[in-house]
Length: 229
Image (tube, rainbow, N blue to C red; front, side, top):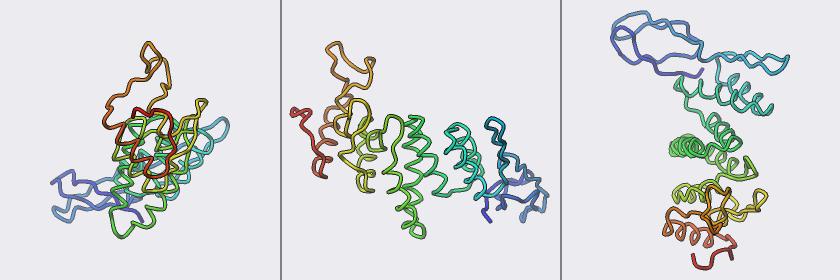
């Protein structure tokens, strides 16, 4: 049974609560605390189909996976956020959240969820399992076929680039109509709003871009796009 940490309404002491418990007594002051568990319930409606999830981690994940496969990304994310807000820290939750972020092109949230996986990976007891999950994530494609590494290079996030590559991201993966790679996406404007009058993109930090490009090429990336970098 998964637990979550709440706080006594009477004295503020920490309470270790099983997800399905309706109430718990505080071991410090003895007060009875009623557990509001509605946030851990799901009610997914898609057309004429309705799926009710139970208040267990396994059923919540199953409900979120069902919504994800039905391309109901907002609903899947809503379910997973309920799990996160309950205090449960499970790498499967953040793995699926990151896949949703990729599909919805929510890069800021994607990096937050990957960093949550990174923190879970640092725990010795779960390292192998979490590392395998992250390596699986690096093979996933999101909107327009981009990967987590594409997003990391586009946002010039060197730390995230290194983490992706260390976990098996393909440094030569081609994505989108423009067939961008993790290197070229830093130079190809993805929209007119991100380009100068001459059509070239805005590079936010040239020194960082050079660093990322050099690192990727040291790890097997092919690039003839910008010799000047």
